[in-house]
Image (cartoon, rainbow, N blue to C red; front, side, top):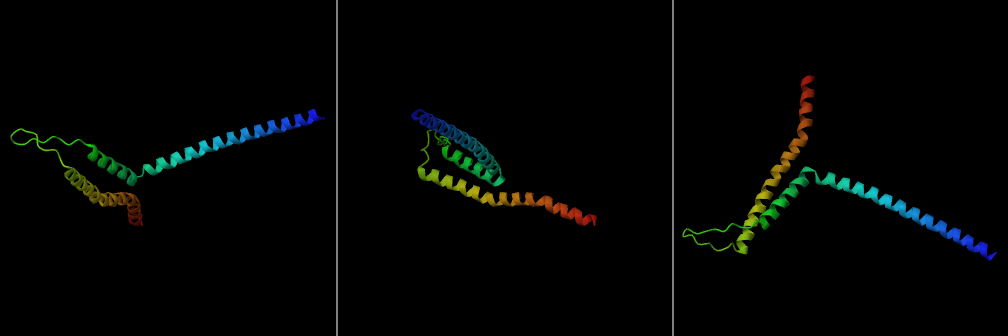
Length: 129
């Protein structure tokens, strides 16, 4: 009788192990599905024109920051003094100002391009009536 209770516990334990393995397998499958969905959503969001423009602007700024300044030479042929941190910061500020001044024009162009097909359709529809 004691032997049968041990085998009953063993079956229950093996059943519990199989159930736990099944849950782990299901959870891994769900994680894969969710990861694919999140990746697709992030890719769609990153390829919108405003986000591409932002990424381009950030890349431009990083390029300006990390770009090695050319060595300037004076008229007598000696190397001029290197740019000071203040001068570098002012140049960066001017670059940022240029980028931010250009952003509204790009946004207007994007909205104009998005609304242009709808406007031309309504014009064609009105002309045909």
